[in-house]
Amino acid sequence: MSQHFTPISTLGEFGLIQRLSDRLADIPRSPDLIEGIGDDAAVYRAGEGILHVITTDALIEGVHFDRTFIPMSFLGYKAISVNVSDVVAMNARPMYATVTLGIPRNMSVEMLDSLYDGMRAACKKYGMELVGGDTSTSHALYLSITVIGEVAERDVVFRRGANVGDFLCVTGDVGGAYAGLKILLDQRQALKDMGDDYEPDLEAHQYVIQRQLRPNARLDMIDAFKKAGIRPTSMIDISDGIASEIHHISTKSGVGATVRIPALPFDPETRAVADQFMDDIDAYALFGGEDYELLFTVDPSQAELVDGLEGCSVIGNIEEATKGIRAYSPDTGLLPLHPAGYQHFDPDEDNPDNFGLPESKHIL
Ligand code: ADP
Ligand code: MG
Picture (spheres, protein in one colour):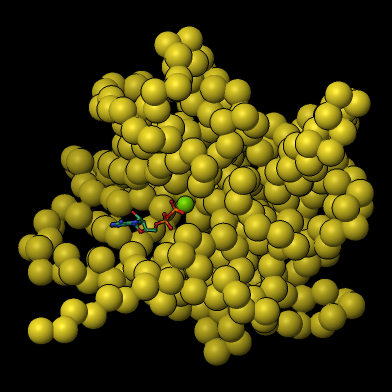
């Protein structure tokens, strides 16, 4: 009998998730399950008019972070934030978290104290509680968090609700987390090259470094939406870059979209970093990821409300699916926008047409 082995890279991360999901297809589905695999969080009915959402995300040393770059307390804070970000993307509020730790032997008790200080600070910020977990040894530091949140049934927002004619919007500013990563990688190289002569040059880059190492989930924005009477038709958080996220909204909603490049909101520090490295700043926003802002769509009748809300920008339009996903700028006109954000097991990693960032998004 011959055994056939398929490299995971032939499927890519999203193809793999689809295949694994298909293997579960004959499990009987509860009538209370509203959204299973395929959104930022799963959604189920918890009571009359009340939905709960559940999501899990891991941070793994050597894949998601370099322990020499990130203080333990920031790592703890970031691990909670990235999970809360997925809860917020459903327009929900986080309630409870559990934490699974894989701890290598070269870590001290004090380092773990510091990790938990960071998680405590994040839990306080988001008004949630850490209620359990699991602890094990492992070869590299491994941190997996699950968060449960709550949303009124009438308020829940999925990736799948965008309609042709909707406006495409984003919260905050984008590309900053990638700019922060560039600075950290550059400073590490400078340290290597200069040894004793190295003088840290981080002062001017505090905002973008914080965007990379200690991101905040935009729980404040879902409160602001509610107050302003804004009801997104679809929403996703930006973990992999706008190009990748708009493809998720489009696939789930059965629509196309145009992103207007000049409308992308950047912080001046992000601009300064892109200038310093002579990079295309738009690539930071489109393909950089880890901004943990919200990409969402609204009915055209709500465009003015979004315009009037501080920290929100309209960056494009939802169109018919046949138009595909495109980027518009006055210099280039309309161009297809590929989802070149970071994918684990990227099938196109070696494809020269898969234009993306100048170098790997890996921190290592
Ligand atoms: P996000 O970037 O918002 O965290 P992901 O791209 O990680 O979302 O996941 C997309 C969807 O696939 C989510 O619904 C997630 O729960 C699901 N998913 C990811 N990995 C697995 C897995 N190994 N088994 C089952 N579902 C998974
Ligand atoms: Mg997400």
